[in-house]
Image 1 (cartoon, rainbow, N blue to C red):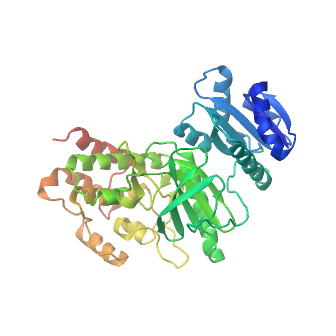
Image 2 (image 1 turned 90 degrees about the horizontal axis):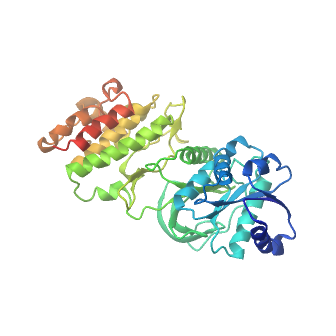
Amino acid sequence: MKLHLVGFSERRSKLLLGEIDPTHGPCETELFTRLNESLAACEGVEIVIVAIDFENSSADTVANLYTLGALDTYPQSPPVVIMASNGSERQAVRMMKFGVADYLPAAGLSRREIVEMVDGALELHALNSGDSRDRMIKKPSAPRSIHGAPELPGYQIIRPIGSGGTAQIFLAKKTGHEEDVVLKIVDLSAADSLSEQLRERFRFECDVVSKIDNKRIVNLYDYGLTDTFAFLCIEYFPLGDLKQRLLEPISPEDGIDFGFQIARALEALHSRKVLHRDLKPANVMRREDGTLVLIDFGLAKSGTDMRNTFNILGTVQGTPMYMSPEQAIGEIVDYRSDLYSFGIILFEILTGKTPYDGMTLPEVNKKRMSTGPPQLPEALRRYQPLIDKTITADRERRFQSTSDCVTAVAHFKFNPK
């Protein structure tokens, strides 16, 4: 095996190789100070392991962090693995978004963890056909755990916590990390046409989340694709989602704060030319510090391809109660469609109920097309302009930019009386 070690002293490199060699045999190793020099000479190299001390501000550390942020400019590079000193969970997320194959804290690593890291990187190198930036890993079907989930190396399934459609959600732990994480596992064993649609949706969801670094967008830690299932690993939200929070009364002031946070999340998403298209309380999660976070980008769209899509059975995708009228009939949608959904959520936050009673898509559409914007109770009437500018079938009467919506909600947030 040929590998590069970046940022390692000779002593530390010998200690690391002492853990690797008994399993993989003697390694052909080169030491580098800077990652860009390693990547420029990586022909035949199977793994690059980078030692990073986040409290060290030396020129070499800064240069290596810069190169990590530009990994996509080295399309033929082998998998890059980080061994971090003094790193945090958020720094790990940043590294994974840059495209590194794995991230492990240097302190307390066992031989088993090091071997698993190397094995995973070797498998990725062998199966990626020379493109280590594409982390859609192809490998044989995995055996099932006692909870019915595929056994994923590096993860311990704790318990199932939800399901929906073709996806199962599990609480889990990742090797080398103390925090709980969530594994979303998508079944790809269905008919070929549906399976391929699910694969494309999964690839897009991972691509969207991995490229947006914003505190109001869910942190994506890991993802992969096999012949029979796909998985992604995201942060765990012990407080649950906004749908659960809506079971309890919410003051108008807190409701407007919630609305402000959701609008800011949409602003971050729309600034990257991405639409969510399935905005609803169940897709708004709550961190323990009070931050609201958007999740589930399986129906998202980007760029100019904004025509609403139908599933294999010809049914419009989305949630009827929160879907814009144009999305419901399959028209081309833009950011104003998400703003309509935002208005429905804001109305529900403020009043405790959705504005329309019909549960089927035709029923909901008929009501919202014939009745106009719903009216808030008298005690909440000062917020009516926000409803009028979001929940209207005429897109031209809605906010004409997400920033305008944020500004309007901010006015009520920072001027509560």
